Image (cartoon, rainbow, N blue to C red; front, top):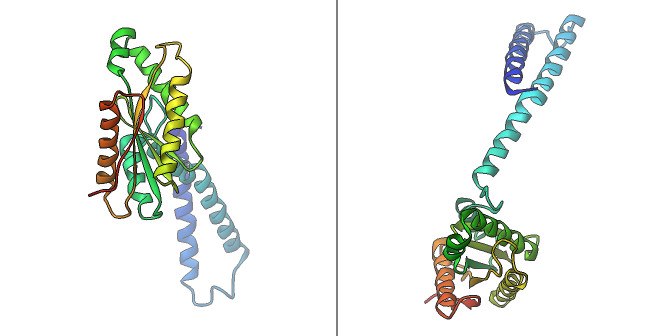
Amino acid sequence: MNLRARIDLAVALAAVVASVGLGLLTWMDREDWPLHLPPRVLALLLIFLLLDRALHRLVRRPAREHSQALRRLALQDSLTGAVNRRGFMDRLAQVQHQQALLSLVMIDIDHFKCINDRHGHAAGDGVLREVAARLRRQMRCADLLGRMGGEEFALLLPATDLAGAQTQAELARQALRREPMAIAGTVTASFGVAQWDGSESAADWLHRADLALYEAKRRGRDQVSLSGART
């Protein structure tokens, strides 16, 4: 049933529900209504309940599911399927109130502009999709992958200290470079790792991971760099 048909049916059902409900309210205004429920009122009550249930199944539940789907799409990067920056930052702030042991990995594809210039933007999009797929294959169930913009990704690692996050980042680095991509050959990335200190804001935590990422770039790319404690 298409949306227009659902709306028309919802309007008709709502009118009937309102009419039946009004009839029931009129009857219930009588002081002795609980003691005298004639078959006609029982029938109206049954019709009211059935129509209300039908209204829920045909309109309310699909509307709620549609709203939830729209929210998921609003927080998802359409190209890679990763959570977008807004969704990732929302989740980052949320988990800070739920867990004390958290680590963050910032990831930037090396020489991505050269890939676009040499192979074209369609190939660049293919590289982004493949990088996201390889990162996902290395993730644990509780981890979250976000695309922060352009060729930059991030991994949120719950219940993971700095050493554990370094291990996860190294596995991801090796997964990217191990096998050349058909569309662009060997693709590498640089990684910056930071463990949450328990009090800093999401933005400050992200900034420390970014600084570690820049250090990995400065040292020659295709490596993992760790952020020290906040000073």
